[in-house]
Image 1 (cartoon, rainbow, N blue to C red):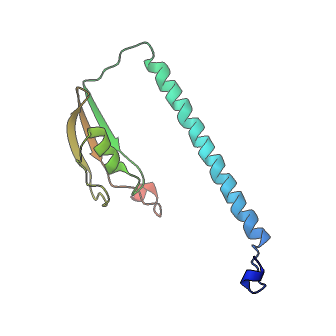
Image 2: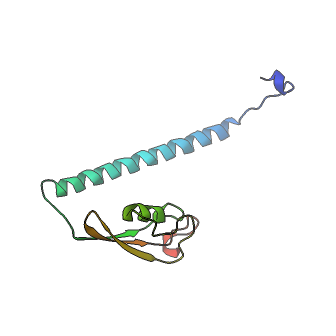
Image 3: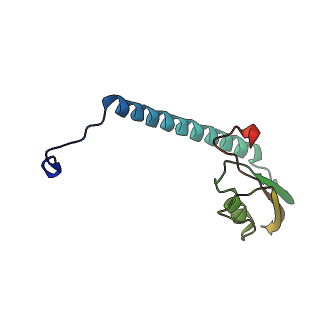
Length: 122
């Protein structure tokens, strides 16, 4: 392989490689922590509803999250039809309603949070 590149080769700086590896490990640890937290929350919710029939006649959902995270698409999936415009920025809150599995569902799509700004400022 070295001969194919006129005898030259590339080496990564060890410090840069260590830095990238450390960032990767940090991200993996955060992912694991989030997954554990979500699993605990799901388990707690299931325990609350276990053995009881909780059927709400109406459901209201507000979609929150980062910009371009799929909130509009999630709203369309929930309602089972294209109600929110996907692929473009949602500038202001949009409310849509429909019937899903025999109950009235209201979904509110909100503008996304910008990763370069604090949540308070978006």
